[in-house]
Length: 297
Image (cartoon, rainbow, N blue to C red):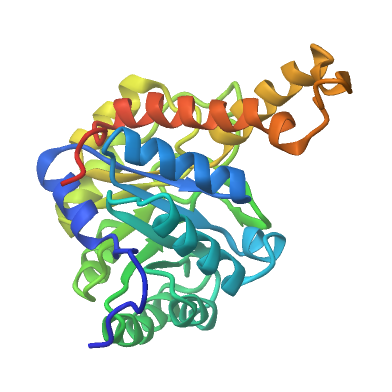
């Protein structure tokens, strides 16, 4: 097998397996730029917390491409001497080809989201990807059902996962399974009440794999904790970090600190500092909920 080259990145298999066995969840946090990535890695290291950092296909384009992202992440891991387990993950990859490109570029984990395809096509493509991923020792996440809402152009109707499909998918060697359980990308609407724990329990009994909760931003803490007990071992967060970054940056502007020309309040390093600090604080709050804080070995 071809091991990941010149990289401290690890695949996510052991992370999520340990979480599954010990009833906690690994935090998956989407990154959007250097500040996002650096803040998350520093917070993970300081709190001894394993972490999955991820990019959507939209974020890959925004940040300049795969080589830019892989170079930035590996550079930070080395320069900051990050020793906690870190996986770099493709979130909602829409094609096997894109997942393969990420693996070739140096990603250590990928998601193929075939939930928009007919089920037989979805499972055939997961089988194809597994051959390539196993050759590179990369973890794979698959999805059945669909996650409600929209994220970077990926739209889901919110279809609940099918336990029979979950069982079949679990036999392909994937490391984790995402499934619709009433979760939604983005901010949760006022009419939303709860995850479908009955669906989650049936899916977990069928697949017996670490399961992934997409749309983790804004779900009440008691529901998050219950979902973890029922088999959720990875929780995806994007919107919550974006909102905390926005709020901290807005306060800096409203306080007119950016207009302090003498103190160079306009310097991007000062302008973005409150948002970067807010990302760290949000990371620490959420990973405490998830139970993964301090779990790095």
